Image (cartoon, rainbow, N blue to C red; front, side, top):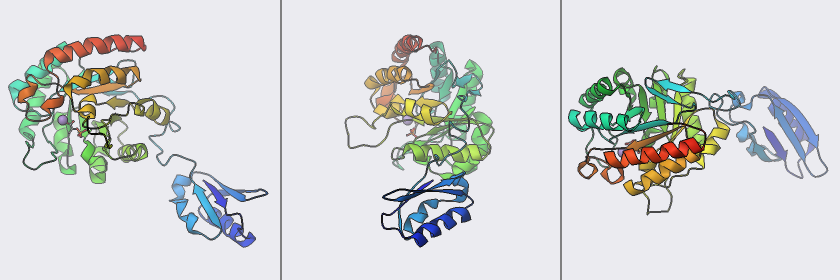
Length: 338
Ligand code: PEP
Ligand code: MN
């Protein structure tokens, strides 16, 4: 923490700030310049509470935190990249994890056929929502536990790990019985009771970035899960809300190298929600892998035109197989595999 005093700060105001820093359990180092005095507070400022409140003290111009507000998620706490293994699915190592499946589980035939097709094309995990958080209360809300059972059947038939969303803290235990990876959806990224409940689960978590959340807010949401005792968190960039209306969201692929410079947690890209157009998905999946993404999550359905949710951004089986071939070549070019 760096405290910059005003040009006209008095000696007693400087002394007051030095005492405040000491009172917060930090060691003050005072630099008296010709123009201004700067006080560096040495120690772990995160344990001292939010010291930005000192900006309201007399004679203080600016208080600047030095350490990232998240600790366990920070690359400083763990310089080696985390590799998360959840059944057949690994993410964070040399192999790019490919998660594919429908937006929603609709019936057993649909999810089993999709699991077989995406496995055949090289996917390592199956996605499918059983609990669906929908913008409209009139939209399909998911098959709930029946859907989870269908996902388990698809896993039994293919060996693919299951990634599925959990929308409320009460359901974490139930969803953990069926799925290898708990997905926290974009709308729930700041549902702190849900994050805490997932922190207590033994299942890996795919945490999606809220469409209006900053990167610090995403990392602090991950911090809740890590702090709860669950080290298996992967972050998912799925697009943010901007003024642009041509794509459903704006997919910032710079998040991949940026996040990887700040955190050891694996980064997964969702080009389906990130674009909202099936025709744009393969190019953004290729770009994600070229940018260094640790995983990609893509919506795939036997008949996208009849899908009960998100059909417009969903690939059919041939399009997914073609995309996987292209992604394989990009992965090889950047020293990874699918
Ligand atoms: C989904 O994966 O189908 C979904 C609802 O995603 P998001 O939370 O990113 O909107
Ligand atoms: Mn969807």
